[in-house]
Length: 141
Image 1 (cartoon, one colour):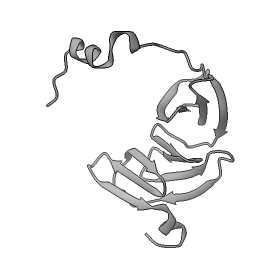
Image 2 (cartoon, helix red, strand yellow):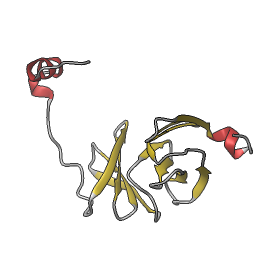
Image 3 (cartoon, helix red, strand yellow):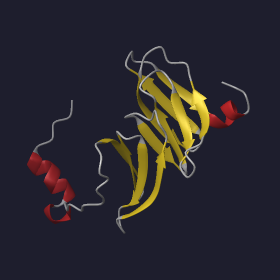
Image 4 (cartoon, one colour):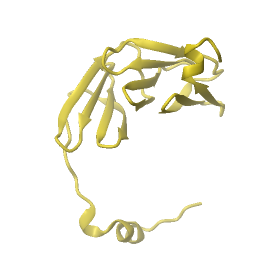
């Protein structure tokens, strides 16, 4: 169990280093956000995924794909998103094209993480799965 007091937390960060910046206003309810370096990805309830540069505050890309839900991760031009069921899509961030659909969970997928060609997913029943997307593209599991 971690116990952190507000004073210890602020002390470790430094009081003058905590700043708030409004990066973007996307206009719809935001279901999920994730950060990769200086790029913020927001997934909205209107099935739009948008990337913003947090330094320049400029929108970099927007892609709409009906069915995207609240679980999302991205890496190097790819988005992994749960569909609110047992499947996860891997999408091209530029075109929105579905590059792969991973299936195998018995429960609803609740979270995912994507790094290089490895996708890790978990479901509400406590199952964790690791997917090698390069192998899957070649016809493996």
